[in-house]
Image (cartoon, rainbow, N blue to C red; front, side, top):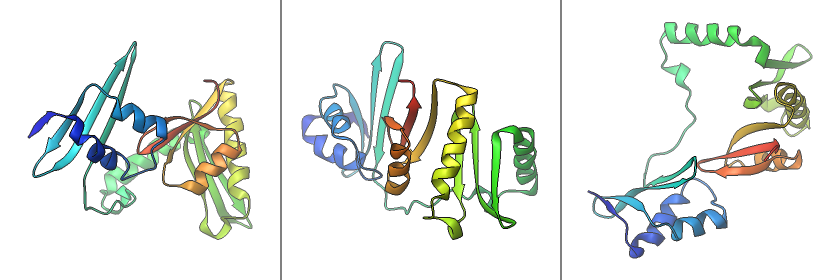
Length: 188
């Protein structure tokens, strides 16, 4: 059953909201003071949605109770040959946004920045924790600033504390937080 929440539901809503990531205190307070939240109830609250409209902006928060283990989406493991080939063609068409980094003829890492949005940042596990991630990110930020001189954005998993620290150390700030944190360098 879907119904309006009542004040007695708030603690469970906050618990569901923070299952996947560490919410910022302001986010939790905003949720606690919300005027409209819908909950999905089936022998207890199983999920919620909070929709807030402000001017030209819409802000949505959701949470769900789940016992499923969240794993990376390695779509290509079950993809058809046609889907993989199509993905390869699209990647080649956008090759000017992709950057590969090598050391001793071995892939060190990769990045992609398109429309000043960092869509990919990867460091080979063999080279992690040696400063290469920072160098790749700095290079990628500079390519993004060539695309938009005022700001560069990226999304990061809120649970990836090491990555968040790196991004913040290089000047990014959290501008939106959900299951993934949206960060921005430059602009507002």
